Image (tube, rainbow, N blue to C red; front, side):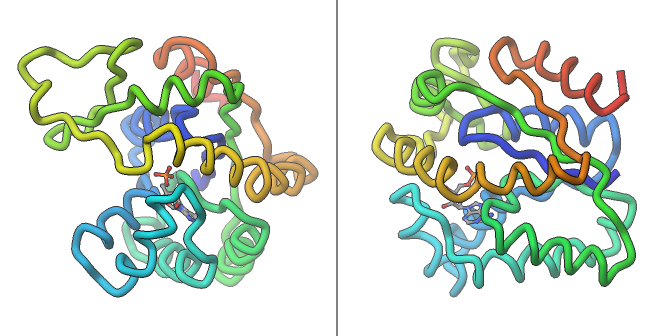
Length: 210
Ligand code: AMP
């Protein structure tokens, strides 16, 4: 299975990707994770990406496209992958198509997780990650156990200001690619409001995995 997860920041793409890779045993390719790793390692890419990420902007296409195109050629992606957070622009979508065409493979599905904007800000600002398990909690909706509270991380771009900028970019740059996939019959729309486990059920049903 080769699929894309699309949705605004905080829609639950990472959470649902974790459930899907557990079930399907395919690679989870999150451009946000790849870019955060590059920033943490202080690579040239990380240095160029950092400012864009902190402010809630998009990292330029010419930096992001090559990392994904190279990654999906790796042997561990030959059985399939979930792209989480890519493509986010029309040029990214077209570059992905060209790479898949060149490899002689096709996309199986594009899952769009829909959540209204007013819920997103509340979800994002309360989001915390356990760096040891990578589990994502929410201070109110999914509180972490007290004993791990001290080690939880708050992403630099999970502030209200950066969140609003990211939502703006989602609507102006990413939402316009949705019709591109809808026209090809690949789009599966999921209502992303509710408990994570209910959204997993909806996602599996939409993919014919339930
Ligand atoms: P995410 O973890 O998917 O929310 O991504 C965090 C940040 O990384 C985004 O707000 C962007 O600054 C950057 N980023 C991740 N994926 C992309 C992409 N496909 N294109 C451009 N920037 C990206």
